[in-house]
Image (tube, rainbow, N blue to C red):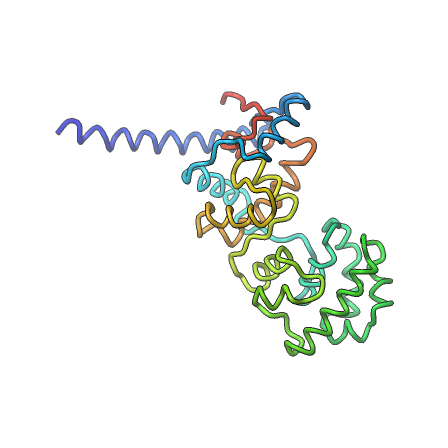
Length: 270
């Protein structure tokens, strides 16, 4: 009988310990004392190891804890691309390929003021679209795609953006990542859009290693608890964009530093 009564107590003690550990980790990150990066040579070696899947996998409990922390800091994360409706979101994501969201946001307000529907975009014409977006990389080809996808939306979907992956991926300039962003943000589907930030964070931390974006996407969908999927790609994008940077990750500001498997950092004692 004594054995049965002590087991729940021990389990409760572990639960309390984990809870305190999470609070300590968040407090340390906010104070800039979560972890430190190792020397550059060690960081490069660590990234190579991570890219080859040489990092111990996360447990289900650790994945859940990480996303609970992301949620506690940013309960309702939002995409940073400015848009006014599903169509302008679609156009903004197409324009963001090989470009920064900030750069796209500088060009699109004037464009969307002039054309916020497929019909208006087609009427505007490719030359004028080029003029609006000429500060964005690959603007000539992107202008061509924007007009072409607008024409296809009018001809095949009554000028409406379809809430279907297959249909979206048939539009000019739209790939899987773009489709996932539109499905998530415009149609509230729990999709996982893998950009360079999500790809880096997933591999570096050991959360969902993969050789290409599709491998990482499928792995993330497999390991992330369903209740976090709606906002998961936003949390990972923001983490990669502002904390887990490519060249100089801010491990000292990382709220999941104690969970991260990256060999390139040194976790400090609480």
